[in-house]
Image (cartoon, rainbow, N blue to C red; front, side, top):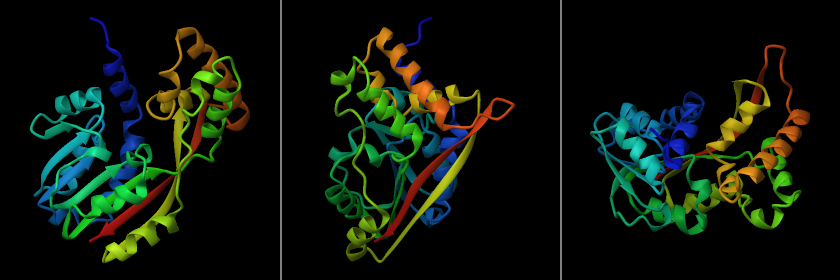
Length: 259
């Protein structure tokens, strides 16, 4: 039995499921999810965030949306009783109203936040909440070295413009959402994830997320050379402990906007 690239992507993302799920639990703990009757998980991935949403909002009718068919397939296998749909977040047309819109580690991939966020708030019921968590780690060595490896090699033309560089500060989101909402909470947390297996564990982590756009442009030989260059940089930037483990600092930005 062969494994498709789609199956691989969903499985790769799920390797570090506990670490990826902890932030969405922290996010939902800051909402009134338990009172929600209608909820949607935007960018639901393989369903780990949807499962967490259901646990926090036991009385809600929940749907999950993702633009990746392999992630939707994995989510359906995980939660057969939940409605999942294939859609791009920026083109998502459902009007709502929703009591809770969750977007966990998804909106950083979607452009035009000055339009997107007000649109999502407009789909909320009165008192409804938009709960967002986004990685805020573009300045971390793991991302900086990824960009440097992309720019320093025979693949540089292939990878030009692939890196994710657009970002806004917490005060930008607050200023944009405050006139449209009754309350806006914004905070930033840095997680320090313990990983086993040295810097190769960092590579495995980002193969399920930030490395994907880079590797999708490369053939097998280029992928191997690119990862070798990336690995060499990581070895200079991260301390590996005597038992082979390391800590991966991972800043994340959280927003809970109540209409």
